[in-house]
Amino acid sequence: MIERLKDLWAHRELLWNMTVKELKVKYKRSVLGFAWSFMTPLVMLLVFSIVFSILARGGDVQWYAVFLMSGLLPWLFFVNSLMQSVGSIVANPGLVKKVYFPREILPIAAVGANIFHFVLQMLVFFVFMLLIRWHFSPWLLLMPFILILQVVLTLGLALLVSAANVYLRDVQHFVEVALTALFWLSPIVYPVGLVASQFPKFMPLYLVNPMTNIVLLWEYAIYNPHHYGPQVAYISFWGILITVVFSIVTLVGGYYVFARIERGFAEQI
Image (cartoon, rainbow, N blue to C red; front, side, top):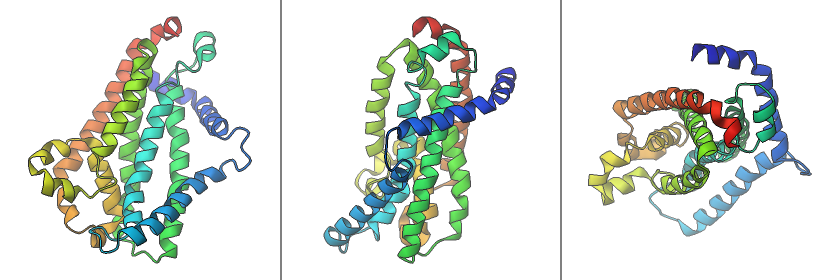
């Protein structure tokens, strides 16, 4: 494992170039180019703000657009990273068969490109929050830690599914279905308190989902405790610890599986 990490570090320039390539391919022949990274969250914010200011007056969640985006943007980073990385090996047969390089660069580059998009979208989000004079909390300082935690989990899963998809192409479809289900099992479009009140017996299992805890942390840091209210009760030290351990184990395990089955990539593609 140490030798692989050294090899990956030796090819860091290639990793950077592949990440840049992922960014360029996404906006190839696009007039606006990277501006789309700003446009998407901006349009979403405007639509959600207008719609829910009209339809959700007096609702349980104040400033629903801010609540939604604080969980939705990290979720989109997670989903886009996995959906792009799962096919990253099979989409580059020429490179895999003819050129030597650490194969893990391909899924890592997909995640890296989405980190870039996520940061841009977050910048737009925070400009919007400044314009509406949002009251920021000191808990906002947790954001780098939360991002690192999510990247660790995402990288581990990206390595795992990209390698498995080489041998079984159904993996790509399974990931798509699983992510759809996981979206509704995470507190993104609804507050976690809704689950606690309607399905209290389901809560222990619900909180086992690592993305539930990561989304809760994002919402807590951005939406802040003042607006978050009783939802804070569902963020616990043990929940965070379990998520941290699970993310690290996923990264180490994903990298191990990737390294073990990488030798057969050229034959399977």
